[in-house]
Amino acid sequence: MRKLLAYSILFLLILASPSCGKKDSKRMPRLTETFKNTDKKPFGAKVVFDELEKIAGEVNVASRAKELPFEKSDDVAVVPLLEDDEEEEEKWTDAPHELFIIIAAKIYVTDAEAYDLIRYVRQGNDLFIAASGMSQEFLEQAGVKMSSIPYYLERGMPIYMDDTKVSLSLTRKSNASYSYFYYPFLNFFDEYPKKGTEILGVNEKGDPDFISIRIGSGHLYLHASPRVFSNYFLLTGNNVEYARRSLQYILRENTAVYWDEYLKKARATQGKSPDSSFSSMEVIMGDPFLKWAFILLLALLGFFIFSNIRRRQRTVPVKKEIPNDSVDFAETMGRLYFLTKDNKNISTKMTGYFRENVRTKFFTRLSDPISIEEDALRLSQKSGRPLEQMTELLNCIKRTESSDSVSDEELLMLNLLIEKFYKQK
Image (cartoon, rainbow, N blue to C red):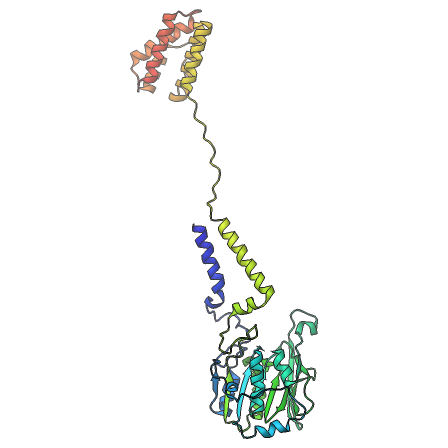
């Protein structure tokens, strides 16, 4: 039972380990790319959010999906982006102008959300998304194809960091580069609409990673490297100028600015309602391989726990009974008497056993032949028996040892005197 309790506690600690670790200021900060507006870690977005508030004034943080900005748009059918959008542009010119900013490691939206986002832009609003991975449905609606190249495939090494840079060209006359030391910026957009698209920045290889697409009366701004808006990048050198210039460019007479803290939570399965909360279990159960690996792990853990519930104990060896020497001696004497009728042999064995018993128990050795006065005095002092009793016993032993034959009466007397010696305390 104790083992079951210990295993259960260990399992719970493993599950809770990401949220129960103690803070240690001496450890290296976590490099998780959260891009939260309040996160001061290297890959939080505290710096860019503060810059946004300085430029825009008031910023609305959309942390839940009950009232996302693009959900307030009219219910209008959405069609894929066309080369000629003049009719759409004229239709939504009078719509309220807003800016919705999404900065995340990856963005996964449902099909309905993808339609709503494009419709939101068509109605005259601006949408800025910086993510290294985006939903395919959304990219198809925008007419864009993005290439996300893992850094280890480009460099040929599993872990590679280097001085990497991005360039910002918001106008043809201005082209500034910003660099830092980390994984290289390799993501880029390799397909986009020819009409209405403007390249605002490129990565270290010169491929476009920051573009602006005109859709209807609004603009869709896409950035393939969200790490350029992280605290680490912006606090390196004068890189904060990158975020400041980018925000100033997209903040053009916007009546309202929204910062997303909801859609950046990756929802692995499609078709979920916007107000569904994100859970790491949803990601695991949404992937068939992760799902079965998780189920197999739980099954193995359960088998290990319940197979060790039974108490394990070493086999207790059978303890052999201690032989009774007195009984064995009596049996031996009995056989000698009844089978051979050899009184001399019996008396010799009795006296020999008596001598050995005195030697081992009282640590004294009887003389051979026995010296009555010396041996009786020494044995009396050692055993605590009366001197007269010891003298009588030793006289009897001396007679049987010195004679060639022993009668029944002498053998019986010898036995009585020895038994009296053994029983007396």
